[in-house]
Length: 330
Image 1 (cartoon, rainbow, N blue to C red):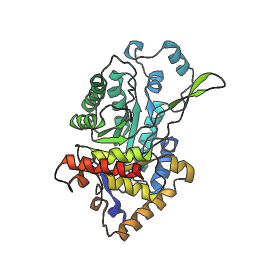
Image 2: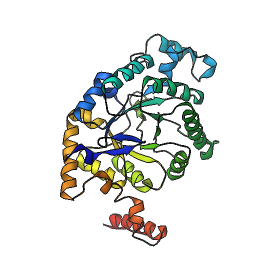
Image 3: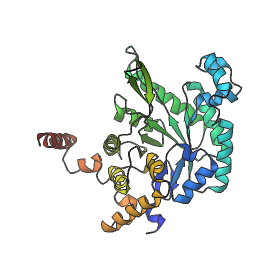
Image 4: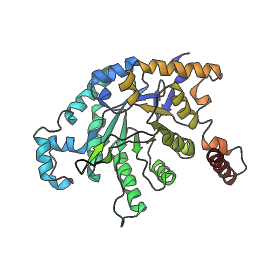
């Protein structure tokens, strides 16, 4: 089966297949990006750039950002400079001279005014798209969900006004009304949403009586649920991220409605060559079910498609409630 039968459109970018190498050390250098392309990936998300990395190199007044001077001094001393912004901009420039698949930059800021400034730098380096990692965990009981939501809209607006390449937002699961926020972000001009970003999680060491952070655990089924619930119901593309183990998992996310599937852990476990196994598995399944292209089955098992089997949303909701009761009654 030719690559053209696996192609997809995500964020307005044309991908030869839906497999996207997620932000990681695998995508931090031009050489790494070339390996991802050679292995068969459809697109690449660069290793995330954090605000602090720009601040240690940029001539930015300290009044423009929220960061303790002591922390900045530590950054400038070389504590976290291995993956500095000037370096990744050079890596983007080099990669774009040699790599044909889309290269999507990834940035993470904590100061609202700095998002567009950093986005422009990466766009000028040649990135094809921009993924925004907005981390806004509600912890203040006096702040409403509407105030938290407004942060997303403001960042999207500011970045959209500053760059011309398409943008996506990689969301966290802890959002009060994900459908509402997702729809509003689409209306604000966001061309893609990624479910989900698995940030660090807290834990407690009972022996040392101290807290520490561990790597967030991806939840494949949580991602599947929200892709299925929102596919083709809001005006933006959806990508799935987290917990993919094999070709069947990629197929499930596409059946749910995903335009692209971001993968990271699997590549660390089995190497980038597993991409060819994933693609072969998708092709074999498509042949078995007589699908000629991804769009022939994308979203076929989304909430919207299944909802059409009923006269209205109420009956569709009853159907899902019935499935819940059936599973737990057994």
